[in-house]
Length: 134
Image 1 (cartoon, rainbow, N blue to C red):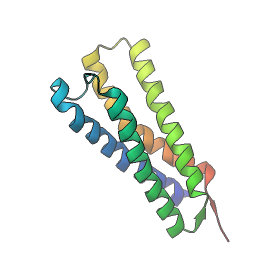
Image 2: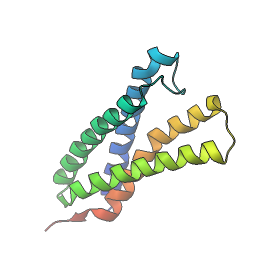
Image 3: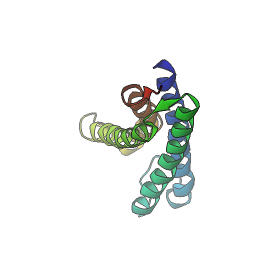
């Protein structure tokens, strides 16, 4: 149980960091730096980057689960991806509506959420969904 959770947390941290680096690299030339809204690239960059990194997380989680002889690796991948989106959206909404942060102050909060949300979501999904096979 602990090893599954650790596997989910490590995979989540790796893909969250990769997703943040991808977003910063792709929008840097558009707006002059990370943490600001890219000029019209959000509908293309964010979903395609998310799908790429969620697929990589899926491969890593399933490979780790097979190595650990655990079942339901694909369920962990799906649950973790849904939780990832929900956590980032919740952090963005709270930082925008309730914390009263300006756009420049909101950037580091959302960047931290982009890295930590998949860590938490894949760890929780691996903890509750996976189980040992015979």
